[in-house]
Image (tube, rainbow, N blue to C red; front, side, top):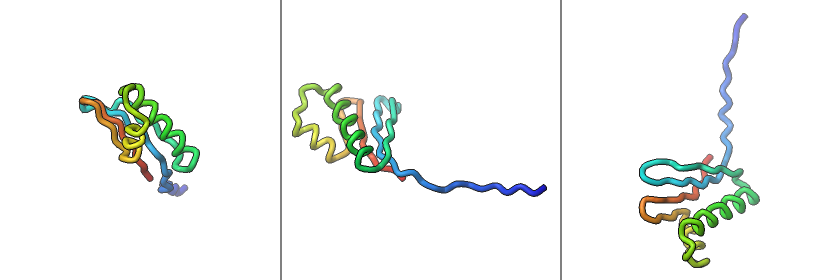
Length: 83
């Protein structure tokens, strides 16, 4: 009996919130790259920033969101899309 191996190469587009500190990935949270997934990822991203920098203004948080990058000392958070 002959067997055939197949590989599914279908990519899933995601938006990811990645926490990184001291050369270590602390966590990766992935969301479906659609309107609701983007909204949820952005909410998580904002809440992480406010948790680590409670004195940041809404304007500052929105600037970090636009950049997709936040850094405080050795701690970093990235908001990135992948496919």
